[in-house]
Amino acid sequence: MALHYRTKGFVFKRSDRNESDRVFTVFAQDFGRLEIMAKAIRKITSKLKGGIDIFSLSEIEFIQGKNNKTLTDVGLIDKHSRVILSPDKLEIARQISEVLDNAIKGQEKDEEVFNLLEETFLRLDSNESEIGAWKLEVVYYYFLWNLFSALGYRPEIDRCASCREKLNPYNIYFSNKAGGVICKKCLNPDDDARKINSDVVKILRLIVKKDWQTAHKLRVESSSQKLLRELSDNYYFYLLGDKVI
Image (cartoon, rainbow, N blue to C red; front, top):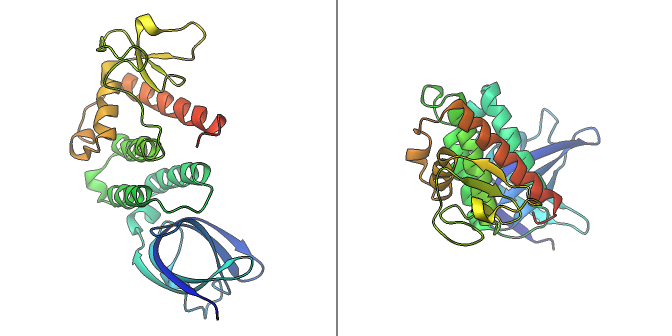
């Protein structure tokens, strides 16, 4: 007799199979990443289709077959409707999905990552009047840098990552190789370190401390926004390229 498993899961990817099937890629509270086949879910008469979709949080029941997992029952917890209906929010959700898809490959339970997903989409699904373009970016950075931390790559941003001395706010650099902020005297010509400023360090500190209330209200100059954008992309692709995530 096949065993039935039940868990809460966040859907971050989907793909159609055959004429009416669909595979959902889920990050589940009790299992981590799962690929679950939903048979005939694209048919109008399917009883499962209302309970699961891209970016939804759902209560999922499945059975483990010889080669794959098959969805047997599902209940919608949160559809995240404001995300689906907003092109800007949807783009951030897709970026988060892509990062998660690249960073998490195997099936391994990780409560911290699951909680981070729940929290991030709670922020993203808030009222339009409460969140603008820059704050949407902050939601993405909040997820990205806290995912790094959850996977063991939390950047050193309180002291120099090389010499451990106190940082001079006017001469600071971010080194992917050192895994954080370094001072000028630790700058190596062969390193890929980039000069940053104290505003970027400030917002990174708030993000990794998960101080959302302060982080999303912080006024950041456009030049510092650009620096944070470049820094985040560079660190992400560095970790991805070295296969550490």
